Amino acid sequence: MKERITALRKEVDDFRITGADELEHFRIAYLSKKGEISTLFEGFRNVPPGEKKETGQLLNELKQFATDKYSDFRERLTMAESEPSGIDLTMPAYPFGEGTRHPISIVRNEIIDIFSRIGFTVSEGPEIEDDNHVFTMLNFASDHPARDMQDTFYIEKKSGSESDPHDVLLRTHTSSVQVRVMETQQPPIRTISPGRVFRNEAVSARAHCIFHQVEGLYISENVSFADLKQTLLYFAVELFGENVSIRLRPSFFPFTEPSAEMDISCNICDGKGCNVCKGTGWLELLGCGMVDPNVLEACGIDSVKYSGYAFGMGIERAAMLKYGINDLRLYFENDVRFIDQFRTEIL
Ligand code: DAH
Image (cartoon, helix red, strand yellow):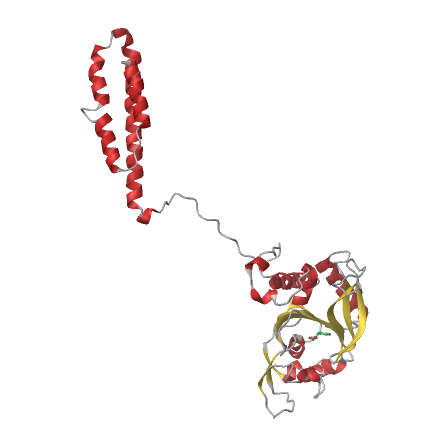
């Protein structure tokens, strides 16, 4: 009897069930009233009393084993039947790719974060502006080349080719927000203005017709060029790391006097000179200067009592220097293989 039980258990184990027909064969062969296991139970009464206990146990185990196998397959079969097109809902899902911030947003947010730590607020102004806020009130001469059709996207020209303060245009820089802030607020003013700007330029690795700038403005009593320099040094160290050096070169902007351009030491060669910095060891980052008294007066601020500084930089440019990006167009193509490389703590 024991040998028969062992042999049957192997048989039950080896029985391949792949569909409903085989499942039914299995049931009839082993679990039905006339099946093999029932037959063994019938023969049980002839087992000698000394062997009954052990044989009974083996027999019960065999029955349990066959019943489990049967119910297991039946359950699988009904599950498969109730699933449309055989989709296995128990399969683990594909991992969900987490999005990342665009490098321009990352750098913009970092710049906002750096300046808010020293008390700067954030101001915004319209992208569609008038000539007055973009040029005239910022002390641009009426024949300044920046007003030229080649540089500025005009929406509405009021008087032929002559520049007119009422002309409607896409702002070419965020310096227009300076004007809007000074028109509506009295000093002390401490604000930065990030935003999109537009220039009529052919798209290339180094130029684009849409890009982003951050403008900075600080107006109070007794503001000096030393304040400007110290603020910019703080900013550069926070954005590029403590090993960065800055240098200021004299420059010209209609709305600042004196004006300067600020370079940072090349972070690729540590200032030794390489092809990125064209051997100079320096990379140009921003324009700045002391706000021209004409601009303060045009905006209704007393230029005898107050003075201030301003600065402006391209965010694409800052991000290029920070991450070593060499083509502006990459920012606008939004290829995930590019933007996925930028991950940051700052949201
Ligand atoms: N608006 C200038 C530009 O678009 C940048 C700039 C230079 C802004 C000097 C400033 C500044 O506020 O003081 O190139």
